[in-house]
Amino acid sequence: MSAVDDIRDTVTKNDVVLYMKGTKMMPQCGFSSRVAGVLNYMGVDFVDVNVLADPEVRQGIKDFSDWPTIPQLYVKGEFVGGCDIVTEMTLSGELDALFDQKGVAYDKDAANKIREANA
Image (tube, rainbow, N blue to C red; front, side, top):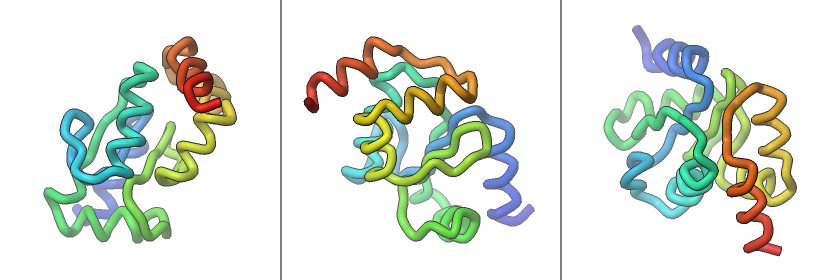
């Protein structure tokens, strides 16, 4: 199975997937840390894939999404975006709406606290 096939399989079989540098418990870059931190704080159950562990996956995710940077967030098989997009969506409430639309459980109070802290 190629890296792209493995990626396709991972994003279709899991509700929320974050391709990141490091892991959700030990991110290894600031951008990955920010997205994982948002998801963790909001109580989202997500699969983390450490692109630093496999060079083929690190390049494969860029090819799969046609997006040059990491982290990359997928919700129900759909590419959402990287750190800047996820941050903007969190602050605008669009991430909440996406989770609601896709049936992904999250802590709405935590999402509101993020927005209040950044208002």
